[in-house]
Length: 110
Picture 1: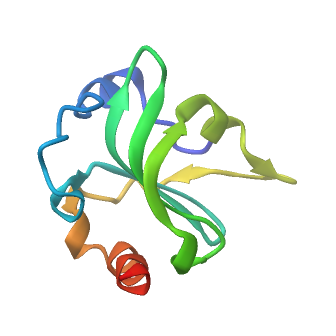
Picture 2: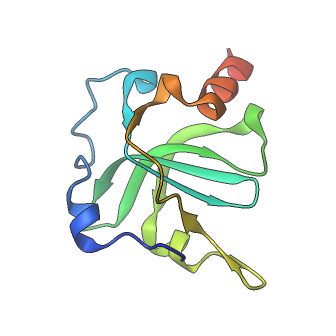
């Protein structure tokens, strides 16, 4: 993975289930990972299992995009030839309903 977050950066993410009372579109997305036309948006993290909770859009398939769990280790190992998943180092924590790709995906499901 390029620009892999440090343990310190991961420790600052909300713990898994800690934002459970917040509506999905009102959750704050803390990190953004991408590879080509795939996006992983992180809202929560569990240090023990190394699982994230967030929103995933694979292959720009907005109709099939969804909220769910994905594993940090697996994300780090994901490669297509010489291209690896990258963390958007310029991404600032943003409410999900302010991220265009998430809004587009949610509107296609509604």
